Length: 317
View 1 (cartoon, rainbow, N blue to C red):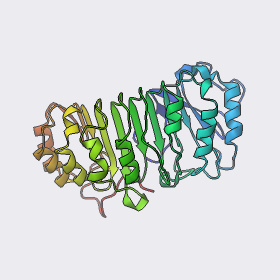
View 2: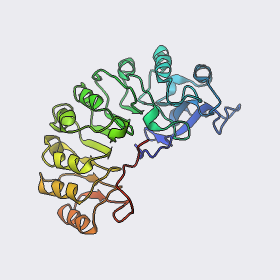
View 3: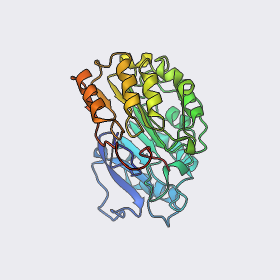
View 4: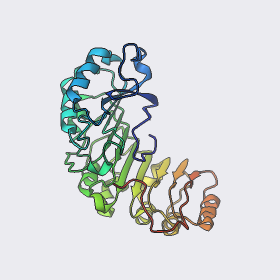
């Protein structure tokens, strides 16, 4: 999934987004709605800040689009004036009409930009009932975690899970580690900052890093993390790393200390990709990475060392 930098999605599940919403560019004019339903990921919600009509736009969507052909769906703001809330209403509307989406493969909640609300203000609802209602999902994502309380997730077919936040509460991380997702191959967590309820540490991540939580995991992203050096030190000896094909510590505050810990730990030569972009790594340490991992695609774009001021994560408020 594309980097989250306070923007709404432009693609999802490999498909371009069509925004079915009041205030969208298409403005839902006659003839403006694509007929090739399967070729699009459909974003439904209120993009106009003056709109407060999630129920109306949802009813119009159901009446205008053959939802039996929808493969990918994202839910935008249910209330344009209060985009940080209303996600329980959006979830419940989708639950009520779940039978109308028999071919839904990918679902994303909270597909809003910072122009509508900051990510750390989004008050999300427990996604568990949605996963239960859509047994054919292979991709699920959500943005925001303010006030989020959830039970461990259970799903037989889900392969990719993404949680984009400015601060993912440690209690949520622990709950995720207790989830039953036997098909999960990709996990991306935007851990964020303790200022916005983030700050998950070793104990919170223990079930994930031990490899016991998700036995089929092949990609792990611990992104947008405040203490990325400490995370790197944990990953240097985490059993889960040995089975990964891709490891992602991007968008956080990684520096030489974290890279040194990674290189001093277990071998990483089996990885296909190591994503570290948005970092404070010196040129000398980057050279060490390339020398130690010549066959690994190491992404060290967006070098910030030498920039005035303190380190920062890419997505906070």
